[in-house]
Structure formats: structure tokens, C-alpha cells
Length: 204
Image 1 (cartoon, helix red, strand yellow):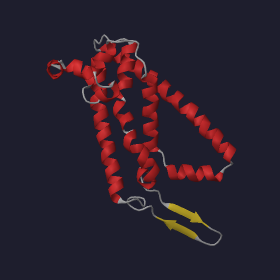
Image 2: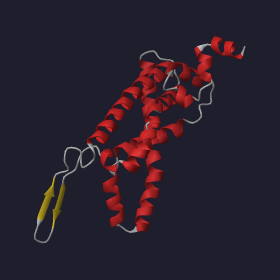
Image 3: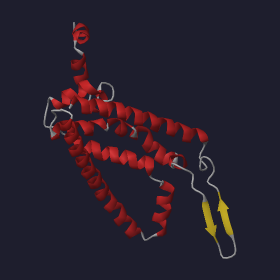
Image 4: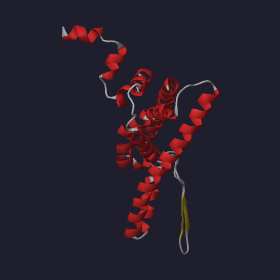
């Protein structure tokens, strides 16, 4: 009887049983409609900050950051880290609100009826694939540091009587398969994001 009831459930009812962050990347429109039907829209800022952190993991050169941190006073390093932890989310949220305002205005110009809060929720939940990228970006940032650098950087060292130049190489010293795997995963995330974000925004 229980199995029969489960089989007879509508797709929207089945989606409602799955956590929204997981459901949104599989059935974005149905999940977004469920979210929009139940205001207030909690968690939008947390999703935006998580997406920002995921993007930072992918874009930052951790080797250069570690070398710079080791070269300055530890107290200054701590102050910089704390400042970035405060400033970067604020910048991300400010950009997010600017993007929301622009999307809301553009929607009105083409006949859309979604309000600012609905569009804000849709844009935030559209970032879900980028948040899920943390599943592989965090381990990569820890164990595959060389492979996370977007492009190999040449090294130039000038001594008192010597000048040494060494090319970064095609993959910057990382195993080729790590670089290729991360590049493929990032391309898949970009495509996934475009699909989910478009569906969420259309629903709003």
C-alpha cells in the first residue's frame, strides 16, 4: 500500500521529498516552483556565499597565495585573511543584488511578472550547481594544488650573478590527467549552471 502510494505520487510531490539543493539540479523548474510557492525564501544569501567560495577555490592560485603569506608577518596575514572573509561575501552579495535588480528590470521590459524577491530567490538557487562543485573543488584545492592553477606560470629568478628562467610547462608540473579531469568537471558545471539558472529564472 505504501509502495503504491509512492508510485501514484505526482512528480512535484516526489520532488518535494528531496532536499531542495539536490532536487533543484535535477528538476529545476518543479523545485523552483515549490520554493516560490512557500515564502519567505530562506537561505539565498548562504547559497550565494557558498557559490562565491566555490568559484574562489577554482580561480585562486593557492601556491602564490601560500608563498605570499609566508613572506609577511603572521599577524598581518591573519588580518588579511579575516578581512577577505568579511569583504568577499559582502562584495558577492552586493553583486548578487545588482544582478537581481537588473534581471527584474529586464524581465519587466519583456512582460515578465516576477517581483524582486522571486527573482532574487531564482538567481540564488540557480547557483546550486556551483555549490555542488565544492564536492570536488575542496579535495582538489588540498591534494591537487598544481592542477587547480588555471594556467602554468613561468618562473624567473634573478640572483647576484645568475638569471634563471624556467617554463611552467604545459600543465604547470601537475599530472596531465588531473588538469584534464578538473577542466572537464568545470566545463560540465558551467553547462549545468546555465541550464539550471535559466530554468529557475524562467519559473520566477
